[in-house]
Length: 499
Ligand SMILES: *Cc1c(COP(=O)(O)O)cnc(C)c1O
Image (cartoon, rainbow, N blue to C red; front, side, top):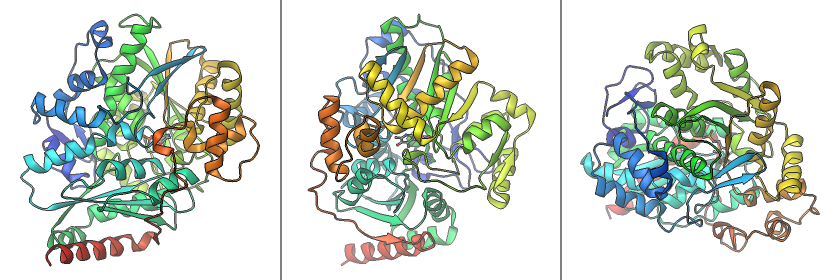
């Protein structure tokens, strides 16, 4: 199994190289050269643990890993760090199924991949015989940051740098990142939005001079964002798992299709669903939900991706994104694996802020459907689903729920549908509390307690005592200063370690 670049101008490589590299040398993203056809026995899978399903799925994507080695990585990632014994339970509320992906250490679905990535990365360092230390960058719209900090906290041979929009994350998200532990963690509030932060990260990774300087300081650079294929592969697993659970629940018979509805930002989560379909999970339609930042919804409606628009800060901030990186991986498949074509679209995006795909590509995307939910609709659905089913959705999950409802109304498609629940409602306690009619809390931390009292479910361990934790990271930076700031730190770390 080799990995190739979406832009077709970088050599094929092993998964370990791709994980260490983060982004391909031609600026493209690594994708599997082909998808292994897996002959799933759904009844048997339904009796397996999450770790066992993960082993089955990931082994064929990572032939460089011995089964025992991979199993041990998976045990480290999922054994004991998730609050739910099933890791990702499937919860039914009325006629929809919520796949709860938020029971990890930081209460959002980013833990599903970022609990495993440090194990994959350290194994890759060993296998690639990499002598340098690894500096890992993560731009975050809120949830990747803390999940990456937790995952890489004090992992030997690594330094982790997180960049979040200073004025674009929830109070809980910000406090999580600013109080992160570890002696190798560096966190910056960026005076800009997520796109600025992600752009800065991609620039550092792609800049030859910057890489040389890092090298002179003893560092190799990579990314913990979903541009890293090591983030995406672990996410394929939970779609296999969800389908097995759906079969087990009797909602579908083995082989019958399911739809998925996914709150989307950087497009990693829903793309992993499409990858799961490629290896044999019976997924029919993929419903891509946005918030008011509806660039993806417009793309699926028109075939034109147009990032020239204002970015709004919404109550679903992890989806406040205009440049959705993983769409590039979907376009690669939609173009018939034509790297030159993808490179052309991406060049147009960076020079003109837009691109338009051709009819053949649009045809291949017909099983995707986009939609968006405004803030008021997001809060209204949180209230009505709680009133009807006693189930509390977070704001992102509610966006997907809204878009799913509209989709059903428009199409009449009654295929059983799994909605990925991407965050604990506690992460967005103020918005969720307001949606449930709770009195305005004095701050986000009081809102946590009020929400617990109303919903009857406990505050997740990862969010307990958040207010009292000491702030360790309060630095801010301008987007254009990211590279200088990072290099200054790397040079300092180097001179400290050589003393
Ligand atoms: C990251 C995130 C999303 C968006 O996921 P992508 O993989 O970037 O599309 C949605 N909801 C929550 C809560 C998130 O943290």
